[in-house]
Amino acid sequence: MRVGAIFLVVLMISGCGGEAASTAVDSAEPTKTYQWKLVTTWPKNLPALGTAPERMAREIETMSSGRLRIKVYGAGELVPAMEVFDAVSQGNAEMGHGAAYYWRGKLASAEFFATVPFGMNAQEMNGWLHYGGGMELWEEAYAPFNLVPLAAGNSGVQMAGWFNKEINSLQDLKGLKMRIPGLGGEVLKRAGGEPVTLPGGEIFTALQTGVIDATEWVGPYNDLALGLHTVAKYYYYPGWHEPGPTLEAIVNKSAWETLPPDLQAMVKTAARMVNDDMLAEFTARNATALKTLVEENGVQLRRLPDDVIARLREVSAEVLAETGTADPQTQKIYESYTAFAIAAREYHALSEQAYLEVRD
Ligand code: CA
Image 1: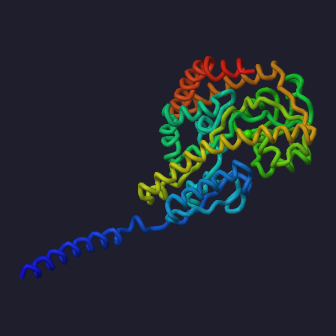
Image 2 (image 1 turned 30 degrees about the vertical axis):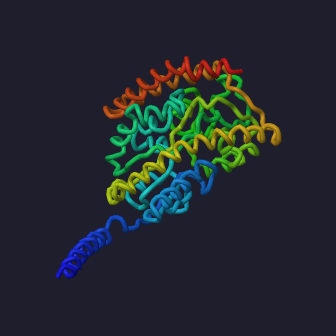
Image 3 (image 1 turned 90 degrees about the vertical axis):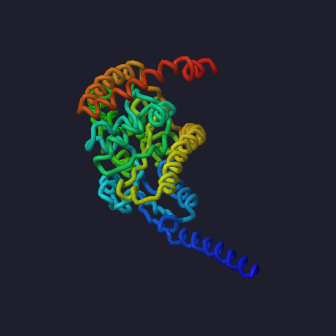
């Protein structure tokens, strides 16, 4: 009798256990796998810019034990570079990687989520986006396009670019055909130049064949990879037009909403990782690449003249203020960006900047 009762209890317990286990197995979420496509605005495997989304995809696959697999496509493999935003918005790819300022024709506020001339550097952009309300504004701005934005990379301060003649005065900007995207291009235009927007993969040929006289790209590490030193002699600094561009990962909102919370958290974490990692990679590689360019390839380094910088700064303020009044939403973003930038600048004057001035 007693043995029988114990046996029955054991059966009941194991019965419950079995039921609990089968409930877990039957639940669709933990075992469901996702196959996504990620399209980029970058040439396939371009150092840092192109390898960052690959790294992000690998991390997500590892973290999720293969539940979310993302295949990365370089510019032109699935869609052209400048169609990444639309492709992800429409769901032809679930994810994209690029820079918000490429989409300024679709929404005026996009520039503020990448970089603006004489604006915030990488450290300040990260502060604004993650602790200053920037991400919330970005999400709001992209929601009508069925997109979820994530900060996913930063190049740090860029170089002013490659020129086939010296820039000694404002006069030298007149009629200068230069590849320079975003508001930087608008500023150049008002200073007398002729801005051109071209994706990375088309810059080399355009400069080589004389379609353009000058180009900006990123900095020594990426510019060396693109071979720009073989088609222009003068390498100018500082990158007034792109002081700390944030790169973006965009996710189709409908696809995003099909992911369970743990996979969403992994995508967010991987983007945040790559956002920091890219800046570390550029910091490590730019210095050695610049040495190679100057010492082994005879590149002529030049600083933009003070009066040219002063004029560009003056025009930038006008262009930014105008952009800020494009529509009520852009105005809100402009005001948030500007208030954060002023506060960061004041503090950095006596922290980062003061330190850089005294350390040498
Ligand atoms: Ca650039």
